[in-house]
Image 1: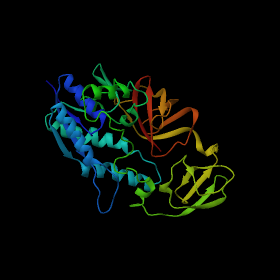
Image 2: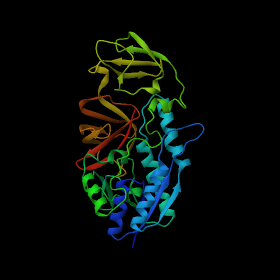
Image 3: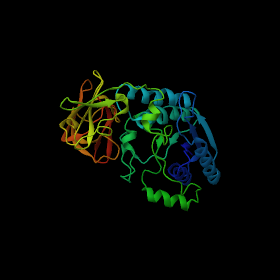
Image 4: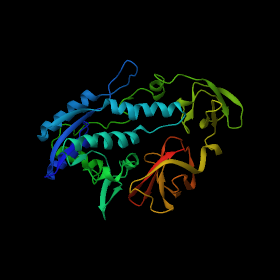
Length: 349
């Protein structure tokens, strides 16, 4: 009988995942992963104590042990530090992607294997298929909840020891199962956003480590119209407030060399692009399917899939979009799909 360590956050998804694994005959142990607590230098909002209590309640209901594992150092080194360094460089990072790559399916999985477990399971909405010795990452049944965008950096050796028990269910299905299993988290609300930031505005959080560096706000035509507090506090495509004009203004570019924030109208040509250069392109199967891949991509979670062609030269990966894309943001990820399969992705340069 295979042994599974199920990561239990205290939420309904991981709770149902644990119950399903038991129903399927696995030997299940729950694990609550502690990754964040406030320090003198950095504060945020994270309800890990309450989350752990809920995980303990679910484990007790299911009759499984629950261990608490501390990964604060690894999380700070790989995710929190990455978030600050990327923002400070003027880019917009995606900490959820890096958390999955280095923490959940990195150090968590390594720890599970070291403890003698065959698999690490999570409550992610994703599916997996093995064919001819190769693992394929597939979209979840619930397209609205699908999390493959955040999982696209996962590799073959990780997929071989990972289970996604709720990927074949919709969110309403999961809620119903939670009631059917009489789980104490059946009515728990959805958790959103980054745990360690919570309800604090992102700029307020960033200013704990990134100092303001004022500069000019200019129109795309060059006219100076105001002063910004620092390029790290702005993201391409966001509506800019504080500069009056005859129409709403949006961030269309950030010039790190001159420390200028460029704003323009919603239809400003600078907001749209037909090609992106991609760094650190990762292919889930280990290699691209061809030198030029016709596929669909998304540049942010839940964006409708966009037709594109990926030129897969590892030294110069370029994505050409069939239609111009709005607010393509350096530091974010372009993720490739073919049908129901997630092929991989990389960082927008």
